[in-house]
Structures are given as C-alpha cells and as structure tokens.
Length: 390
Image (cartoon, rainbow, N blue to C red):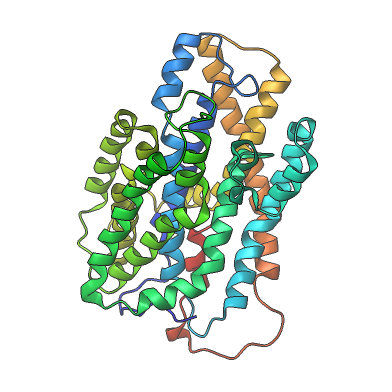
C-alpha cells in the first residue's frame, strides 16, 4: 500500500484518539440500556423509560459513526510504508475476529440460540449479516456486531482507497471532504425517496426496514463515513486542515446531539453529527501532534480506550443476560443502579477479554513469522499508532 505522506512533526502515537474510544462505546451502552424491550429493559416506570429512550435514541448511532470515521483516520495515519494488502488484512483479521467469535459464542449461549435460525447464525458468524436487507438478520445474534461486518468491508477496500486518496492534490482535498459530507447528508433523502415506507422498523422509528438498511447498515453507504476519516487524516497530515480546537469541536458535537432528535429519524442517525465528529477526531489528533493537553490522554482514559473494543462487543450480552437473570423490572432508582452494575460487569468482562485474550493474540499473530525486509525506523510509522483503532 502507498502510505500517506509523512510530516516532520508526525507523532508515533495519538493517545487522545485512544482515550476517545471509550466515551463513544459508552454512548452505545447507554443507548442499548434505554431500549424498551422485554429482554433488556429494567424499568417499571414506563413514563421514565420512555423519556430515557427518547433522550438516548440517537446515541448509539453517534458512537458507531464516530468509530467509522475514526477507523478511516487512524488507518491512514498509521499506514505503513512497503506494506502489502495481505499483511494489512492479516493484522485487521487478528485484531477483530477472535473477539468477535468470543462475543458470538457468548450471545448464542446466553440468549440468541433460542430464537436464531441456523442460517442467520452462520451469516452473523462470518460477518455477512449487513448485506441482507432484513432488519432481524442485520441485528441477529449479538446486535452490536453488525458494525464489525461493515468494518470488515472497510478493511477490504482500504488498500484500494488509500492510493486513490493520496493522488488527490492538497489544494483539492477540501472539495473532496465537502463532497463526502454532502453525500452522507444526502443518504437519508435517497433512502426516504427510493425505498417503500413499510414495513416499519420496530420501535416506532420514522423509517421503514428497507430505508433503515440502506441508510444505516449497508456497507457501501457507510463507506462514506470511513472515507471521510481518510480524507480528514490526509488533510491534517498535509497541514490543510483548519483546526477549531478540541473544546469547540466537543461543544459543537454536544449541540448536535439534541438537534438530531428534531429531524427525521434517518437524518439524525449521522447527517446531523457527521461534521462535528470529523472536527472532534481531527482536533484530538492535532492536539496530540502539538502537545496540547487533552483529558483523553491520561493513563486511565487510554486503558479504557484500549479495552473499548471488547466492551463494545460484550455489553449487550451482559445487558440481556442481566435482565434474564433478574427476571423482572424495578423502580427507577433500583433500575438505574442495576444498569450501573451491568456497566461495571461489562467493563470487568472487557478488561479480562482484552488482557488475557485480545492483546496476547494480537501480539502473537499480527505479524508473519517469516523474516521481513528491514525498513529504516525513521521511515516506518510506529506500530503503537495502531492501538487507537479497533
């Protein structure tokens, strides 16, 4: 693969992006904790539960979109000179698939085997569920795992995309970034216009199942998020990005979250938040390049970020398993306490999976055991940079 051009002040690590990963995964947890499903909800008070669900309705989409943009950014930042597509794909496979299989097995054992057809389970195991225009297939077995099926498509295309993006002149990058943002914003418009309005997505969302599949699940459509991360990373590396700072970027994102609840549902999924997300990712990277303080660079924040992939895959299993074990709903204070307990259990399980399984496997199998040609250290991005992306 052709690496993105280096700059003299390019750091080996982007610790703030590592630290940002856990807040994004936490948003997904908060969203799943709000779902008013018999298999997940802990709240007896339906009024409170409805308010919670409304407030959290777009948080899961926000977290996932952040991860998609982050993936494109970090893979571009850490692209290795003299790398091959096969070596890149090996590292990605070793990084994500073992954890994915563990979460698949646990989900099947805890709840999914009781109602999942064998064909759907196999599609999910091989990360193919997002290619089927069926809501229940897309979210089969372990619902958060759909995004890994989409990420697998990103990884498959990255060795082809990066050389193409590197051919874009620095002066024209802003037009490509603007065009990609425009395409993301246009996606819901296309979905609403081109697909039927029925059957509706369960839960009363303002979208049909086919509209939702096209705008939210379909990998070639979500590739726009990933491509935006690639383009923004190159703009930052080439000094063509106008940074507004981490604080302003975070404020803009915070404002966009409630705004997402006042637009048609599919627009709120990513069209409203895509620009603030790109600004935040670029601002965190720029802060690390320039040595500015960020709250996401601390050791606890980085550790949580490193364990966030395992947390993302396991938390729904814990939420559903906890509801099944408890067997009933509770008063609002008790339900909030139990949700906090599920968060703690999810973190503990993620820490174990990361420390005792993910990290050893990644270190052991990411690189080929065959001798490789020596590349001068000053021309090779440090492997540590890869730790900020799942």
